[in-house]
Image (cartoon, rainbow, N blue to C red):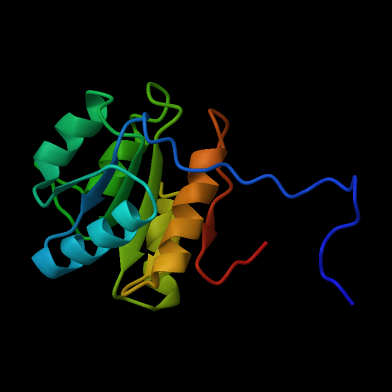
Length: 156
């Protein structure tokens, strides 16, 4: 039996990466982590920039230079809080901005902290390429509306 949809049946719509769109910003204080995320995203067709310093991240995002931030949750900035929390205050000005947190911590407290801080999703590191790309594409497809927040374990 074939798993193909019948002729004329609607096909699932997936939005490919927009190579002409703003880049994805990878934020990690570990160079190896940043390099791995960059390689996975570039292999998926995205333009990527990376940064490890929190204040530089805020300048890039607030200058509307990026469309999505993939960040470790524990990146500090001069505003005295993590980058994710600082960005939450900018969502009214930048409704298209998406924030995907990756963390080495797996406790329920850390996952709740990431979502409470304003992230649109949470991944455990190291994430597989297919998982990272699926989440970035999901967030990219949301448009200007609020992103449905979820963690890596959610599959809906």
